[in-house]
Amino acid sequence: MKAVGDIFMRIKVTIFMVTIALLLSACGQKGIQNPLDYPVNEFTAIDQHALPFERKDLDGKIWVADFIFTNCADVCIPMTANMMKLQKMVKDGNLENVEFVSFSVDPTVDSPEVLKAYADQYELDTSNWTFLTGYSQEFIENFARETFKTLVKKPKEGDQVIHQTYIYLVGPDGKIKKYYSGLNDVPFDEMLNDMESLQ
Image (cartoon, rainbow, N blue to C red):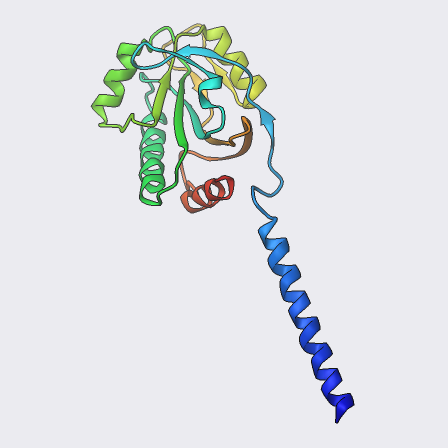
């Protein structure tokens, strides 16, 4: 009987140790699996209130970024609506320290006044959503390509700017973690889960 009791005791101890090991490994899985970890290059801009804004203003914060312009004939308004929905989900989920940033890809047209009018027109919550301009067309094209690995190009003819429709998640360490569709089939729940993992 003693031998049987010893076996049961060993089984219980083994199960206990395996359970503790699993719990400890789960606790260590903070963050995003296989993040891109592209560092965000320095930038200097002005916001929709004509106030200076730099990359360091986002240090230590989780931030969500996209590239739009106010004169966009097709994708930008749905993208902005999706950012608006995500912002509301973040607030409803009580996620803290999350900022939203929209870079204008048409800075010559998108002055601070134009960006503010755009935000006002769609009744956007700018308490943690900043619209940026104040740099050159050359800068935003190079910045988008080098930092976010995305295309921005303003053709010589016409008033439409070519750009991709991704939404980017940047961690508190200032590195791009992931990107998602910002136009169709937007994975809102995945985005929220990823933000929670960075809290």
